[in-house]
View 1 (cartoon, helix red, strand yellow):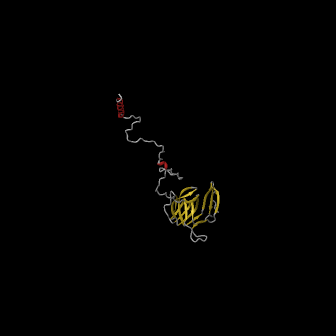
View 2 (cartoon, helix red, strand yellow):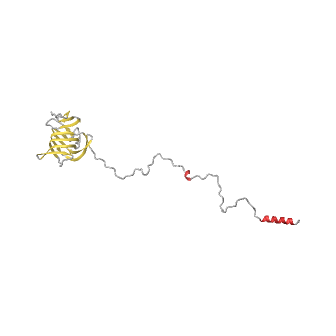
View 3 (cartoon, helix red, strand yellow):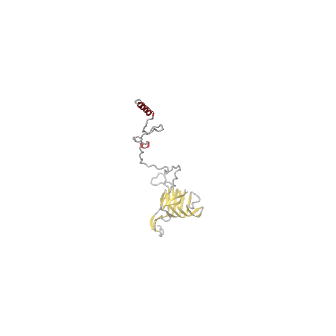
Length: 241
């Protein structure tokens, strides 16, 4: 009996040694990747946030759609020069001689603030018999300049007051020239305007019983024998001395 118990104890110890040990830990995962770990460090800063925004410019930049398109078109031509003027005045004479006359053409002149078409003449000498000039100065009144009856007024280019060279050509800007054109002893009624200019350009011409509406007279020396200047009503007749 004493030998049997030790043998039984040895057999029990051998059986316990052959059984696998028990464990309370969870089995390992079948994956070979390590288990990720969390970190308390902050994530790296974004590359776009590290660059400071550009400073705003004080000069605004127009969007491409609103920028004015460049143009290579040539600039518009300069307007044609306009002859000087102011107010029209009327010349009447029993005879008008124009020497070395040249009809330049139709041009623009300013009359009472408006542009009108006029005839432009150049001449070297004008002889005006029984000159009377009238111009409106205000409603109902006119300025009258009258030469002595039977006298001949002149506009010429003779040097005066020590001038070494004669004045430039006389320029006459005319709205209307109406009268009788004396040609080879004939009296031909004419009425020249910008709409009906002179058909011929002759160097010497004589008009009788002529009425000329002008806007400007430039150049030359005007001489009026016995000139009388007065302001009269529109209805007053012209008096001569």
